[in-house]
Length: 231
Ligand SMILES: C[S@@+](CC[C@H](N)C(=O)[O-])C[C@H]1O[C@@H](n2cnc3c(N)ncnc32)[C@H](O)[C@@H]1O
Image 1 (cartoon, protein in one colour):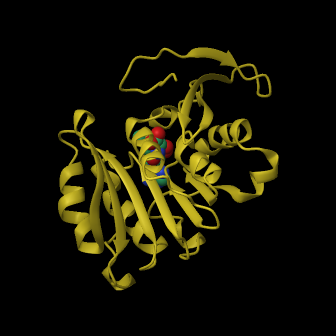
Image 2 (image 1 turned 30 degrees about the vertical axis):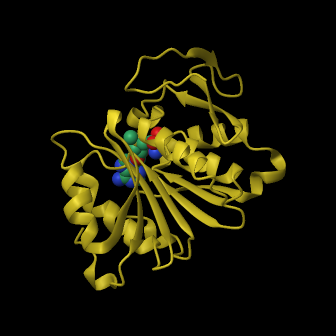
């Protein structure tokens, strides 16, 4: 298995996507989870910023699914900040009906990876839609069985909008899996230890001490929209 993470060096091989314009280049790496070999491409020519990497927190969440032998068959899921789509694609391979979301300019990269990894017979179980936190969540229902997110907690500018979106999309029966890397100086620890527990019941289900990554399983506390954080 090759991992190409921003935190590690880039050992991947540049390939040109012949289906796109000549200025569209991708780097592709292979990941193995739950017996599936995922080919994940990153568009490094379109200024996708942090979205053009596979983050360790995403890998940690996929490993957690593997470790727990999770089966999403028949379940309805939404992923926030999908980036390359690695987590949502694995969730679909594990049987889920998955909506992968991110900011509008990231969606083409996600679509590319879906087409490279999902057999056409299962394609109808995946959906790719724009969702900017704090802005678009009202376009979505709140009947999800699971909400997934990895490495979403890295800039305090977005913390309140992320909480509002999570709170809106979740009902009290929704399980939220959030995998976060703690970095100094961005308030990520207090986001998890102070802000989130006001609105969600938060349980640590996995921890990778060497990378300071924690996987949480959360459920929404029974508060209403009147308790949402201001924009
Ligand atoms: C660090 S990347 C993580 C990508 C992927 N989940 C992973 O683990 O590899 C953060 C992702 O969150 C998305 N994101 C950041 N701010 C956002 C916002 N305000 N609304 C929606 N998505 C956002 C970015 O576009 C990016 O894809």
